Image (cartoon, rainbow, N blue to C red; front, side, top):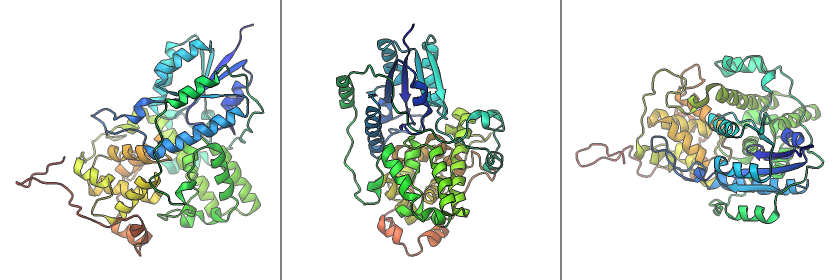
Length: 449
């Protein structure tokens, strides 16, 4: 009888709770668990696109913490996690050969880059069984009442169709896992090759709670739903600052440290234990937005990264380095925008309202190509989710799913509504200092450099 050796390629499913991949692998004779840290994440990308590394210190720290936690969780189940600093295209084939792997398992990704990567490896090693499992979303593809290419053109239409659908109960962690052929010394050596984590630049006690990993994510989930905060979520969700003004679940959801099905299960228990009101419904409503953007990315592929998005005409914006530098450093002529960006730079986090304001400013007031803002968020945000991030930026820029053709926020009005006394601006030092929109030479020609 042939020995069955499975390999789990962890990616955005860094947990043992409600992870169907672990249950599928449980009947293997041997199991290899691996995560790839790709060197290109830390390098500038093509010059024809928004430049700069794809992952910054905040995201990298949170991911490192999540990997350490996953490794410890797997060890408790008799397994080991190999974290490889290398691209899957180069680093995975030697592992397949070394351990005689005959089945590779991975969570399905919404975006085209990861899908293309998977398909290339699958084509090159067709003698192996390759299985992707949907573990990152609320619904299974076969549940949806429309084909992928028939995705509703607006969130409202999507919501009405999927809201009545049942959500499967989350799976409990497996009791144990198959034997690991990984050598402990090799695991330690691979970990030593990873990029170093930089010291925290901001020591605010609130943001120190953003610790990557399943156990910290589940602890935060429990704390939030052991409080009265869910009952007033809708009233405070647009506040610019404060740990208690939103669920703060997005960082752990983005990496799959907690599953969205587990969140919904805890939400439903909360509604039964306390009450169901407009605010508790709105938490689910926001999770449906996440679901929509994941479906959107699967439907439109590379188009979610393209300048014109889903539109026929190109946006009337361009790239002005001076303007983008001012925006990304919080040195614009708009104090509220500056404060939001400085909070992002210091903590790796920004409120949803803040994200809309700064995105609208970059596109509408500063007339900068929206992709540079999306790429900057990719670099900074600890809760970066590619489908949600790029979908939301397209929405603001008017090249995506918004039937109204983009959103333009009145920054002065937003400041009056959400920071009337200027407390947020003062806390994050958003006051304007020498914020000319463009640099000019002696003849008043823009230098754009």
